[in-house]
Structures are given as C-alpha cells and as structure tokens.
Length: 123
Image (cartoon, rainbow, N blue to C red; front, side, top):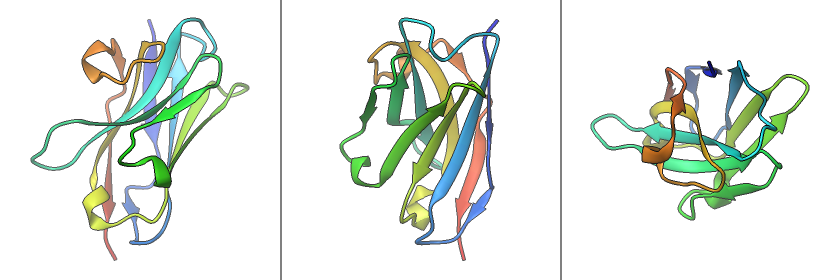
C-alpha cells in the first residue's frame, strides 16, 4: 500500500520561498510508469494542479505557476520536493502530493494522495 506524507512549514512570509517535502512509503518514486504531483486547494476554491515529476525524473509545471515552481526528488530518501518562490497570500492553500499515471496533469486520475498540509502566507 502506497502512502504519501507531506511536511513543511505551515507559515511562510510574503516574497519568500515555500518548500514542502512529500515522503513516499510502500513504493519507490522510480517505479515505472508513475508521476508524482503537487496539487493545492485554496480556501473556498477547487483543486489546482501545480506540477509533477515522473519516475524518470522529468518534470512538468502548470503554465500559470511555471515561472515560480521547481519540483525535484531525492531518490535516497524516496522524497519529492516542491519549491514555490515569491509567494503571496494568494498562495495560501492546502498542499497535496499524489501519485498518478506518468505524464498526467489531471488530479482525477491520481489514485494515491497524501493527507495534505496547510500553508498560510502571511507576515
């Protein structure tokens, strides 16, 4: 059974970089043919796809967030990391990591999700 767990600071100041880690248990992040994605849900709004890194290490980002987003991995720790730079209060959301088919940017196709972690951007 694959399990995902997000971790990171719950409060980030405006203009700083948000950094979150997703630790994967029960499966390797290099197993074909999956992608490991970050999704967020702002308060009162729907889910928003941020980007993903595939089992091979290739990345894809939402065009609306691409200029501020970086997703990487640590294979020795079986972890996926999200960095979102120059944050504003509009980046306040619950952030999730999830596993889906390779190349998918459709959250409805993801079959394993972390519980999510609240990130608030405020001074």
